Length: 460
Image (tube, rainbow, N blue to C red; front, side):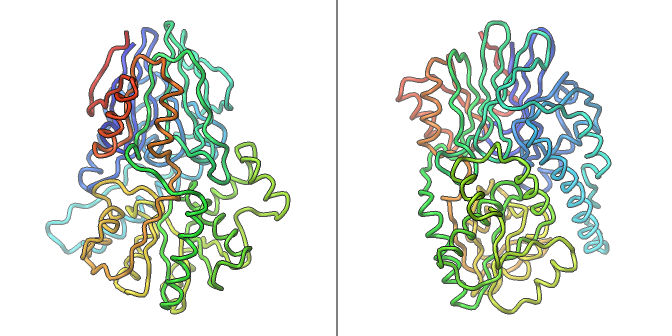
């Protein structure tokens, strides 16, 4: 058996790994790479041939850096089944079509804006909405814990990863070996979802994410305190809080936190706008899957009703409503995607608010290298938004406690649960996070490595 690390190797985005057995090949994830624009377009458009030729695919979860290039894969000729949890499939039904619409909209906007520039290269979307719908026809839903056979001689199970709704670890058994793909691991004690499941032995090999391999997050209590402080201080200045957030998971967590703050009297009387049609649809999917909720969330639901709605929150769907937010002069909280500020309505809100020192850009998720979100976190004095450089005068607040990724403590705890494994392969992380984690694992007596992009290993 061989594993080839096609994506998210020494990087965070573009998750894609190939497992080759004597009975065929399994592609694990097919995510979009996010980074420098030209590099991203090139990587996302030119998928590895072995990925397209894979017999089947198993998807860990619906985040775009894990699922977003599935329509391209199918468009290029992949015809195998795509296994996912029911919640993941339901989320992808909205997310992949939304991704297509965003690509088409952004391409049309930029091509029109720079039509007179002789050096401008016209942008084409990776895929359209019909491509996304065709990809959805190949999905097969399997609930947590139920064994299935993606290939003859291979048994797989989904284990709860506790990262976003429907997120899963994958346990693969073939040829007397048992592999664990962690997917993106969540954190213990976070609201809404159940804690990550601990895989049971025997375990021979582990592919483990390492996004925050050298960072320790703040507590859930700190998460609420920081959000209350940022909103309060910004409202006093007469500004707006602009929150780039993934439509799946992060938006719901922020709204849930704002709901609690409002009920406890810790939130100023300020309107909250969720400016994302996708977030509206995704929030409805959340309501359809209470089996993924933790006991505290189910209790809150029973006592207070809607987990994701309260008096001052408004979900925005129509483009015209979104554009009217540009005319707001009073304080407000605006949440929009994408989470790394690479596409979608958040770009327009940043364009209109980034140069006003009264405003705050509140970062609540990981920002990959070379993304606009990372440049904002780094507080670059000038940032390019929709092709135009603008002065960054707005305040920048980074709330790492909101992360849905496990931190160094969580990852070490997960690795120790897999201590009998022959080797742990670190994926989905950048070197500054992976290298200290490798040292920590070695210091704890575990064998670990961080494969390079395109590297292939044979499992003994």
